[in-house]
Every structure is written in C-alpha cells, then in structure tokens.
Image (cartoon, rainbow, N blue to C red; front, side, top):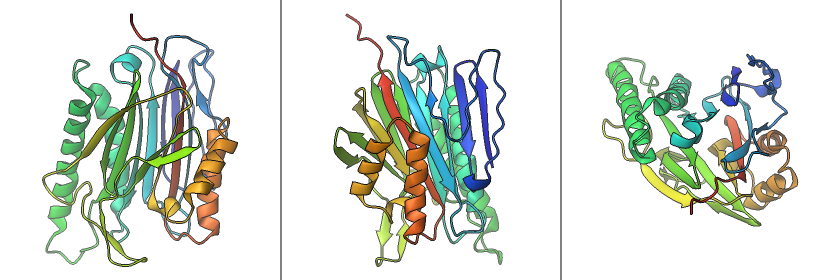
Length: 293
C-alpha cells in the first residue's frame, strides 16, 4: 500500500508493501507538482531563508509474505514548517508476530498525524514523547488482550525511529533497532543505538520497542544540521546486509535522485540474501533558515 497526498507545499507520504506494485494516489492543488515513486520531494529550494529538503523513500516486502515495515514523511508548509518542522518516521514489526505490521503502521501514521496536533509552543521533545507514550500504551493494551490465549504470536510490537528537522536542528527519537545515519561529506555515522540482545550472528531479541512494556524508554538527541547533510533511515533487513561503504557510495553517487538511491540500497540487500522486509528513507538538507542577527 502506498499513498501520497499533496496540498500546495505540504506533502504527506506513507508507504507499506512491495513497491514493485506500487500505486500512487495524488490529489494536487492547482499548480501543485505531483510526486511519483521516482521523483524526490524537493520543494522551495530556491526560496532563501527557509528549511528545504529533498526526500527519497523505498520499501519492499522482500521474501516475506507481507511487509512488516512501515514508513512515512510529512513536509508541511508554513506555519507548521516553522513551528513543528519536517518529519520522517520508520517502524519495523517484530518477526514472531503475524500482526506486527499493524503496530508499525499505527505507530508511524499516528505519529505523523498527532505530532502536528500538539501545541505549537511545546518543544519537539515534549510533543514527540507525548505522542509516542500514547501510542505505546495503546499497543501494549492490545497485546495484553491476547495474553493467555492460544494466539501467542499476536503481539502489537515494533521498533520506531523518527527524525524531526526544525530550523537548523535535527531531533531524533528512537526505540528498537531501526537505524538513523548521517552522511556528512565522506563520513557516514550511525546516530542511533540498537536496543537488542544479540544471542548469535543469526539471532537477536528486542529489549526495547513500542508495545513491549507499559512504560516506554525513549532515546532522544538533537544535533545541528548543515546544508548537504544526508540522513539515512533504515530497517535491519537492509543494514544487516549492506556495508557502510556501499551505503555511503550509493548515496553520494545518487544524491540528486534519492528515491533511486533508496531503491538501490534495498535491492542490494535483497540480492545478497536478506530474508526480511526492507525499507530505506533518505533526506538531504538543501537549505537552512537565515540566522537572526
């Protein structure tokens, strides 16, 4: 499933499923450019004094029957652009639950909706944590309803990572083992920490995630952004099968077509044997607000 809705300079995109069979629904306003799966979101790049980005995304169910990953992005126009920023989110449902895709879709869709409904005077961290705690409570409650039944594989649990770009700062909130990287120049740096217990090269278990516990422990960090920075968000179906060198080289070579870069990263992971769902998101900082004097 994939849909994209465009309202003037506001772009809201969700994706889940095999993009080889992607269908895009676009409802553009008059004179608004419609986006397809091979076209970066690249808005207002010639307008000085504003935060502007390009976004590329690709997801595939891979060798699974369904895609347990879900991702989305929201690129609003002002006043939300200034008060709340641009948001990307990614989630990965746990493998041992056949309904975990509900958790990943719910977490991303609700976050991209509810975050923008919080008070504009609230800090990013406060707004985001409030929404995530509410989502965690709902997911945990759904899982608790199935406890004691024969359906022990009906857990509403997923990883979750979000990148919120506001003014000249990147805010990161993270639970689980989805990852966020930053490519600055030639240096690729992993910004998040995996919350998992690795038993062997093949087996690992999440020790933190949405829906596991009633109390949520969220990693938060903020970091300044620079023009040219590219952030890469992905699930373990991709990063466990491609090298950091391949990631950096692919992004640098295709930094003007981020949808293509995302697709190539997913395809490479699939070709070398990934058995998981695969998702890649990329966002490039094209312009920053002018600093007040």
